[in-house]
Length: 189
View 1 (cartoon, helix red, strand yellow):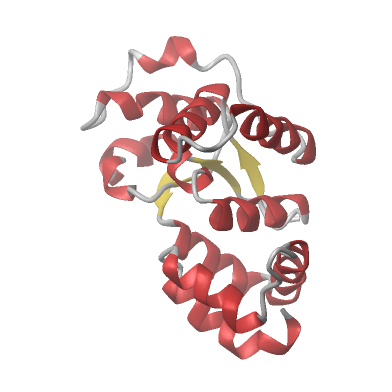
View 2 (tube, rainbow, N blue to C red):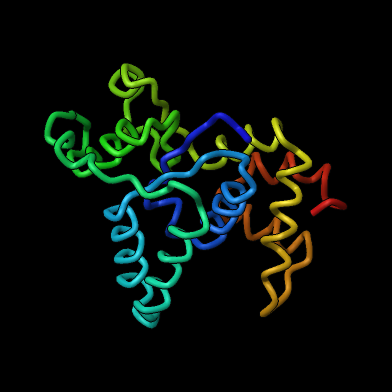
């Protein structure tokens, strides 16, 4: 198991391809994943706002599956810390508070600039874009990473995805460095 614990921000849980990959890697113990009920609420509400045809019940089922699939993922008891923190966007303070209480090493977010290095490093936390986070774990655990990707891809049946189709999806999600590195392992994924 990796000794890295990551708080997954709502914006990396919102897109299913990134969420599915991160969760499978966490289930495979490649890293420890954490989130909060508030983070769940944010990604679910954003998805319902942008795709109103989605069914809330299905998204709540995904939430429940996430909470049961990843051991010790749900952080609680961070709320009192929120008001004591300063970030450029006060709405991001709950994420940092949860990362502190959850003893996370990294916040995986599409917006790492929202968590200034000088502000979060005093807590021993860094913010990383999912592409950087995933690429670093691929380099550390290439075999296990490929097994996780193969499992995610195998679940995609309607329609099924070839390796190149799946890598194209990840590229569209902004995982350019990760996909570039995965190219050398295409026969394993």
